[in-house]
Image (cartoon, rainbow, N blue to C red; front, side, top):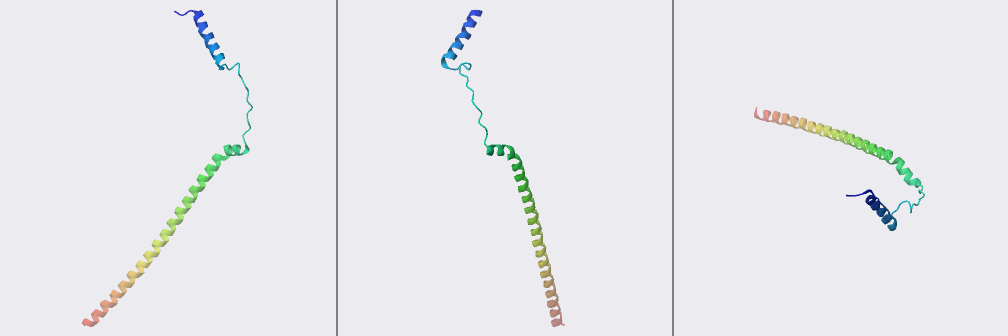
Length: 108
């Protein structure tokens, strides 16, 4: 069984051991002056999020404009090809009609 005296001894023994090793916070309290942060660090602390948001919105806007431009250019190229193909098909039909007419004249 522990008595009140033995509890008191263990607490005082721990305090004495802490003081002997220099871990007693009351005996070695030192105050340090806080160094003022630099203006650069203050700027980055204050404006990092707004700059990041602005950059993200700018990249998104650029990607959207690039996609729209590429889509419009692709549609234009496809329309030119379709027009070229339609013109060539019309020429083929015209030549077929001419050759068919020439063959009909020879056979008659």
